[in-house]
Length: 359
Ligand code: NAD
Image (cartoon, rainbow, N blue to C red; front, side):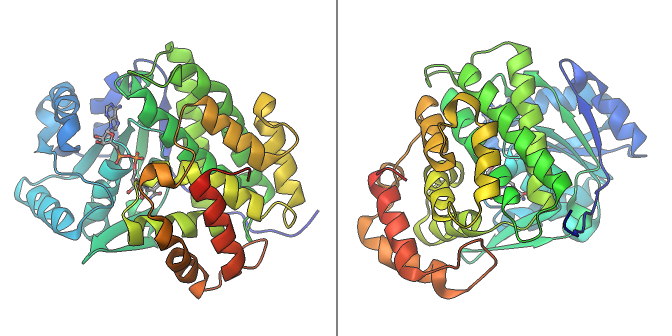
């Protein structure tokens, strides 16, 4: 067996139908008495229900969470937490809301209880992100890792099927890259493979025909949440490579939406690494089950199609004339990836992804 390094991170997970009811107890367990509930403006009603469940342990609601955590919002929320005398944050939402909790924790150290409502997996990572003057900075700090995570399928029932699909593919991307990471190790690989399996099984059931809200029983929703948990753990436990860097470039320079970009790029980034990471490819194929089809990249595209998710960069607003610039930016810095980052090959990858050609 090859030598490796594995770091385990602390965290408590409270999982299953009805578990949101233990939120007040979980806040108390952290020794906190005044929780600031965080949400996006769209999820204000959900935040209000959560605050109500917290009773006198709720210090207030801040519903300003927004994609990629703009620094002005983070600073304002931090000041609000301080003004309210909050000693903990309860982040109810997806990666954007949990990201706001992390931005508060980064400088204040306030513990976070996360109640995820998407499958992005941010609740399981010590990775923070902040956007200042149009540029997103990310970093790792153990202070931002949520102390407690409550996964309750009731919290994803209101998710539009189309959002569930791309959010789930975003989670699968964490697992795929963990499997061929420069610092991959058997523990994180096992978690990543199981994450893909749980998501590939459950997402088609809960997404249905891709319209309306998610449609499934608690069991399927919980299985997708379990997959998201594992995906976040994989993201936290291994370095990300070409796929995440490319998505970061496309999101930052062309303002493409986060989860749909991950969904479109994933089959093509996987194909780029196909010959350089054969073991990882076999594990992805196997975890994709019926979608595997003997090729990991083709299997990921088949899954995205089955989820009625976008599968071309053109469909999510990428200008065709921006491809060369995106390849240039992506190839500017070398970073660990199974196959070296070559500008011309990245441009070819993006061109195929723009058209939705076979990966
Ligand atoms: P999101 O949090 O931006 O949510 C997308 C939209 O869906 C929002 O309007 C939100 O209010 C709504 N929504 C969320 N859950 C809902 C529900 N159950 N019912 C109805 N509406 C709901 O989306 P996301 O994909 O979860 O997060 C994306 C962000 O998270 C990006 O900024 C990304 O960079 C970040 N992220 C960070 C990490 C990390 O480890 N730091 C990991 C993954 C993603």
